[in-house]
Length: 211
Length: 211
DNA sequence: TATATATCTTCACTCATTGCAACTTTACAT
DNA sequence: ATGTAAAGTTGCAATGAGTGAAGATATATA
Image (cartoon, rainbow over the protein chains, first blue to last red):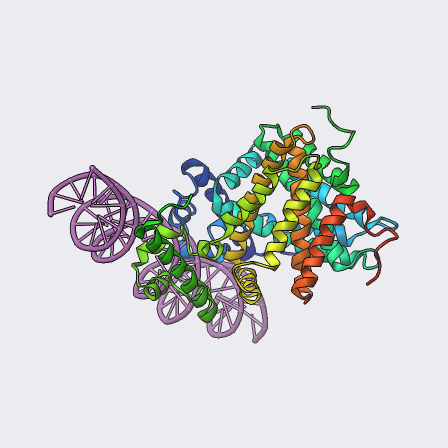
């Protein structure tokens, strides 16, 4: 699992990281649209053409860790705990992913914030983010059905994933838009998940009218 | 609200419609990526530059009716019926929008199918569709909160909209992906809405295991 | 009809993205 | 160590989306 990375591999990783860092730095310094691929390449001292052998598009650099994150969530689903219900499993997977968002082991909380802001403020990045998340939802739904074939048919699995992720996403975004702090945003997302599990019908009812 | 359209207005509408029809026709005949703005413009006999005074991007033509559809849904929310609960209102709005999808008064069912397929098969169109839908969800959530300020706070409204729309969308897509007919897809979306209202917790339980 | 105004067109330009062929570097077997 | 294959880079040329600005045209209006 880790014999000899090899010079070629190491160089590739270094270049990739350099491209990511230069891109994100430039996007923040001068703005996404104002930054050209040529500038990014120049900052890393590679040819513009090379950029496209690492990333398929300018947008993609921003989501460099997406595939890894998606796979983590899929692994949670695949490693269903004995006796765990499909919904508990799904909630565990989404919660873990959410926790990552708010406490990324690699990057600082500030850089995560900045990246979120970047994505939210650039339409094409927002569209790309939604597209990636959408694809992930499909994969999650399939994985969930595969993990619990006797509990959920494919469409039910899709319903569950769509509802949970959809609720958490819009709740988080709205919360953030209202000026909430990261921990508050996270709490809003968690609450959204809980509400969705227990049923939206419970909303507007007696319970939570504290605010 | 309808005194004299005026020649200028009529011409504009005609040009717009011609651009839409030519675009959709060409996209299907030769494929989206293979069709250029120049070709579309030539087919309608306007300058390529003019295309961009009607649509902000090549993708946008495909969603020519989106804003209208979004406003219809928002109107439903704004016209809350006396005594209607927030959730009933939301469900009514989403159901109506869904019905439009499967029985568009203007276009034929086949052309609707073809457009759906076009969007699903072209990544950039899919991303655009998701982005538009996302924006609509935000507007719906705000409208819902405005319509029922005593029943839902903004984040709860977002949770509800995100869950319902998210569930319906992924369920419909999955159903369609499984080869379901349009009526079946519609049924899947409706069921997803019902499940989400009553709570995902009810999934995988005793009830619906007919398939 | 004359004038103001909304549209359309032309032209020039930037930039993302891609295909291709030549070139350089790393890996590897002898 | 040396030669060759494989992988990765680069330069070059093109395509096509999207934009800004100035001038030409058509429509509306007094």
